[in-house]
Length: 112
Length: 117
Image 1: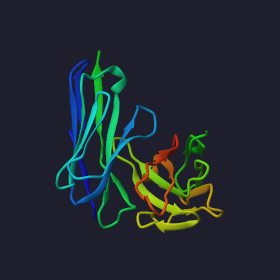
Image 2: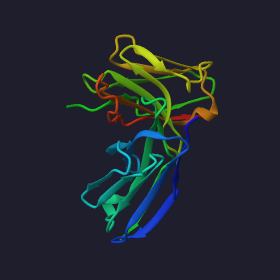
Image 3: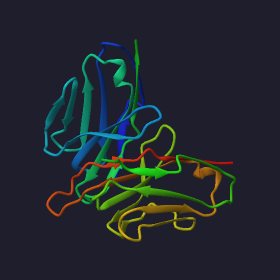
Image 4: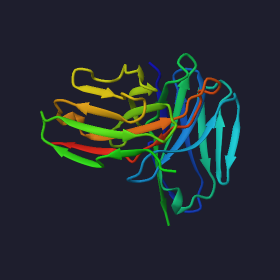
């Protein structure tokens, strides 16, 4: 079945430093979504990417979808303490567009 | 507008006991999902409903887990009997799926944290 892998599993950064998490799928994706889960909270939708090579920005967050639609990345510029949480990518395979498979997440800690 | 509602928020039971979780999705959302989330892992789909029909239950351990969404609105997930390994957070999510756009975001509830002793 489809597998979605994320690296790194954990990341500690000093406030103001940049942060990047990478997501790789074993199969070609029809689209990919990113979610953020604060400690003790539930996943909250951030964005969805659909097109090959697509890049979207939300303030300090930049999301990319690979040309082959098998990988994606989330980059945060100048992290703040409010960015703390676990970031999950979730991909829909081309063969089963309605099924969303979540990665294992990257847990971000921002040190003040 | 109220988000996805789940109850209870926490549940502690002894192994071999039954347990049930309830979810009320966002009003108008026709698709409902039950996920299991272990500590340090991403959500894993257990079952997905489109209206009252279970369209994907391939990951649901049917020997002990059951779910229903009788009127296509709220849903119940049951475990009977519970095992130690069932300790996890059970998340419910909903989305609005339309014929023209199947790529919709999912809205998650707060989850039910189950501890099996």
